[in-house]
Amino acid sequence: MLLGLYVPGNSPLHRRRAGTKLAVLGVLLGVMGVFRTAEVVTGGFVALTALTLLSGVGLRTMLAQLRPLLWFAVFVGAFQIWLSGPRQAALAVGFLLVSVGLAALVTLTTRTQELLDCMVSGLRPLRRLGVDPERAALTMSLTIRSIPVLLELSQDVQQARRARGAERSLRAFAVPLLIRTVRHADRVGEALAARGVDDP
Amino acid sequence: MRRTPLATHDLALVAVFAALVAVLGAPGYISVSGLSAPITLQTLGVMLTGSVLGARRAPLAVLTFLALVAAGLPLLAGGRGGLSMFTGPTGGFLVGWLVGAAVIGWLVEHRPSRFGLGWVALANLVGGIAVVYAFGVPWMSWAATDLSLSAAWAASIVYLPGDLIKVAVTTVIAGGLLRGYPTAMPVQHRVRRDRDSVAG
Amino acid sequence: MRMTTIRLDGVGHSYGERVVLRDVDLTLTETRIGLVGANGSGKSTLARMINGLVLPTAGRVVVDGLDTREQGARIRRRVGFVFTDPDAQIVMPTVAEDVAFSLRRSGLNAREKRERVMAALDRFGLAGHADHPAHLLSGGQKQLLALTSVLVTEPQVLVCDEPTTLLDARNARSVARLLAGLEQQVIVVTHHLDLLAGFDRVVVLEDGLVVADGPVSESLAAYRALLD
Ligand SMILES: Nc1ncnc2c1ncn2[C@@H]1O[C@H](COP(=O)(O)OP(=O)(O)O)[C@@H](O)[C@H]1O
Ligand SMILES: [Mg+2]
Image (tube, rainbow over all chains, first blue to last red; front, side, top):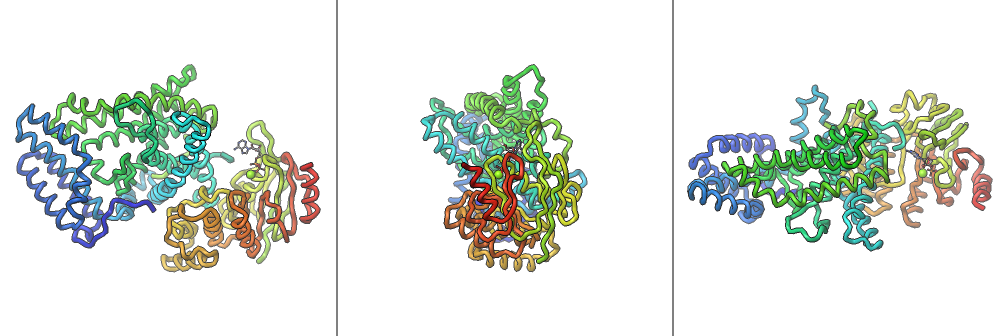
């Protein structure tokens, strides 16, 4: 299976159930989003630091999660300093870091499969609206299964494109890729039917 | 396909296109030269999904992809993933993909017969750009603590040239698919919409 | 094992205007049946009719008294199908999960399921790969996995549509050996004629018509005559 971002460990954060972590994350982010005061954001920052240390995933791992924010945080910080002063800038940047960091912490301490299972059970109440949680789970597994297949397929297409000397043409890549993708899906659908997926 | 299309066929298309969106985020496909803006082909994947799968299956494919990202698989361009992708400043664009794919699909399905591929281009401009930015930009302005909308626009605008190119590419590819695999396009599939059991 | 009777009565099929099968009348009861013919002669269409994946546009297909048009689900539980491309047939990310997927409605509990899965993997030489991602298997191993996932449900009939076409000679041979050792009734579409050694009957299709039907040597002689 594809490797998730999960960092194995046995911290109190790792041991909590996915649903609990998601609920706490939701509440924290909700409160922070509504009351975006200096106290709340500072509290969030302290919590993020403490929980990161507690989780044992390491500060480097956390910083790597925050890194993609860098240019945007600089942009926002500069903009807010210019517009409303350093205090507001610190608040804005702090909020960004905390809301991304806390969410990342849940991802880092929860197995991908557990989060997927959690989502599927979250769909159960929607059953009467016609949602089928089992099919949703099958769809997700089938997607994970299909990624390496399509990757291989797209490498084939790229080689064919190179062989024809159309190396730079996005079209010479995408049209055959898409046709093969649809054809592959046709075959998969047929195989699912043969394996009784649609049968009562 | 070989037989009257069944729900398994829809399920397969949803999963395989979710995988396609993931594969287009893998490194090595960014070969559109002469552009300074960072480009990933992932939005291209969303546009293709909308154009090929139609209003009901396309958002399910994008939703499946996003669920796997949220569960911690690093499937977004640059090997990123996890819940923080949704709580961060660009989370709105991901929601925009979901709605955008549905809008593209709906428009392509309702193509008036006197329009040709120009309609596909229009559908992608509306769903793949207008809708995506309509979610992405306000979200960014909110997440960055009252960053003004115009500033959030300024931060997003670098992607616009790339997105316009992707609309053009999607249109050309849709044309190629129509010629190379006519039954794949939703315009030909209207009768199918009565079938009502896809993955949740 | 009791053999299943598969009857095709005046079967025809067309995709739109295009007629791909005509006037097929066959009663299939033998343990080993081959189906050969040129590309586009209608082999896959015919094979898919046996488990109701394709419904005939004329005539009917009856498996042990069940009409594919009405009893598709029940028939598919008796008739397993192996496709040419295992990448399309393997739907779960890991080897054991894919086999277990076939048992999802078996009513077995998790432990019994795991035991059945491991026994099946063991039988086909995949036990060491149980928790490996399916995409890391070789082409031959993937086809073995596809077969395992079908056979774990113990179908009465196995239909294989060119199961060795994508394999190299060695892997093709191991699939052939595996098929030969099955107690099930097996119907194989193939261009690899050596796969048909020891078969009871071979049906030859040409342009949607059955043009020869009989023992291996006679049918293959007729088939070779068509090639010249
Ligand atoms: N879904 C389909 N739509 C239209 N034509 C089809 C379809 N599937 C197969 N055909 C056509 O039917 C004929 C028989 O196909 P098939 O049964 O796959 O033959 P074989 O397996 O012997 O190569 C071919 O001419 C093929 O092009
Ligand atoms: Mg065939």
